[in-house]
Length: 102
View 1 (tube, helix red, strand yellow):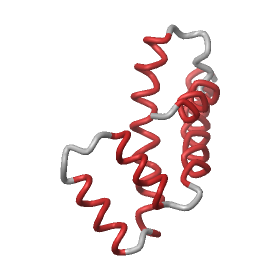
View 2 (spheres, one colour; view 1 turned 180 degrees about the horizontal axis):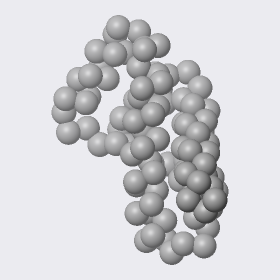
View 3 (tube, helix red, strand yellow; view 1 turned 90 degrees about the vertical axis):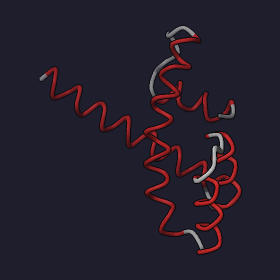
């Protein structure tokens, strides 16, 4: 994960006060959830050729970083989509926490 994306997640999920180790742990979990949301959102709009390339990457032991790099290259506005999905996940988390507190 590049530093810009990491910084965005730290800010979005208010992880600034967590230790670097805890930040890494939480970002890995949060990143996985966001990645799934992003895939569900962008896959239908991929061209057949890009879908085929992406499926081949998924079928191998391609690293998450390499998958993100591929998507960043092939999906228009990928960073904005990731940021939106992070905000959506945070809103869902906040709504659940409000119900728990309420």
